[in-house]
Image (cartoon, rainbow, N blue to C red; front, side, top):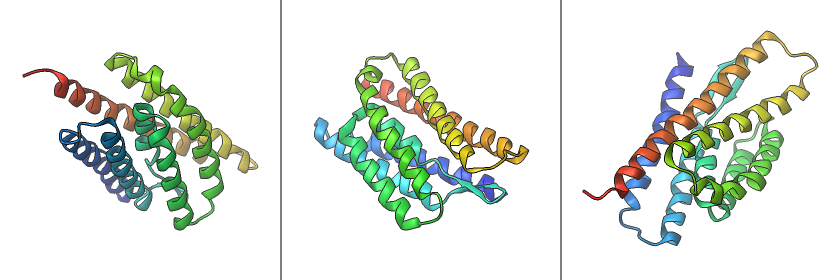
Length: 192
């Protein structure tokens, strides 16, 4: 039951942050102001997700911190990705625990790949943006779990079950948030 409650809390953080950002950009009409606002909102969301991780079982915890990182980096490129990268890693260091180095390596890989896709991402139509971000989230978590597998001498059934659950959470979470975000951004742009 704890897993379900924490998952819902993480989803609420993602949705609440998205709606706050969408409300506030109505008042910030400059690109620089919108990007600064995106950094602040996305940083708060990813810190909340890291503060309240989802207990998967077998002592494994997972959070949805990369959903705001991926989406914000795709929409705004390096200007947003670099501050989020710093916040993510500094906060992860403060939290402590054995997963800091894999997190640092994975976030570094994300930093040097995802923002480069920014221009191509913005040129896509709405549904393709959703698919693109969802596939990117899947690849990101797949790479993370593949790299984790090197730390185990043998992979058990529990590892594969946990990997499937984590992959589903990250992939479907990103798809869900992107679908809502694209819907509300399109609705905002249409004249009334």
